[in-house]
Length: 270
Image 1: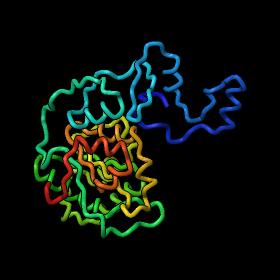
Image 2: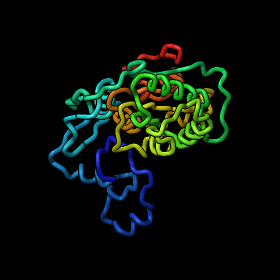
Image 3: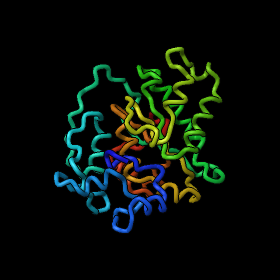
Image 4: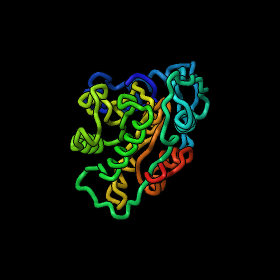
């Protein structure tokens, strides 16, 4: 990987044997397959900055990003404080054609007490999909177009679950238009955080998935600061997080941190 070390890490790392063969005995600490090209370059760069991480540790980042020009608040502040030690400067310009939101950026929660557990590693929650669809419809009733909305999730099963749900709805219910381009939107605007790195949209719906009965605790804890950073900074104007607010704040320090900057509502409040 080459790029911002505070964004998504490589999905597939190099195999141990390959690293050993090309590195030889003298490669020392750089033999770790967890390292990226960027982290190795940063280590040798004298023109760098120290970023204080949320857990108190520090990262040495070569020529760190200082000026940010994509997101307005709260997305900028969450990313800046969570991943960049608070030293970025926001120079994002106001959009020429701003959307009219049904609600400012927020966290949308729900009553998770009666949600049935999914099987295996399926993290998709049907009620979250329903909330996302209702939110999309509320946004479209204003001046937001389908193409301006990303559905981003940490988990592949949530991506597939929501895509399947949207495909199951009749065209009349969704009210697709030719401009919406249903096929392309389902393919390009619903995905995991990894697939959206480097992209941007006016609105991001960050669908967290995961059961609240304890069966998905490990998955909830797995979502790291880089994942949250990328998801939030894809949104230029508004971000909406959908998930059990209580459970995620309890088990995931990164989403608990993000929750400080987002009012928590139910769908009825939107």
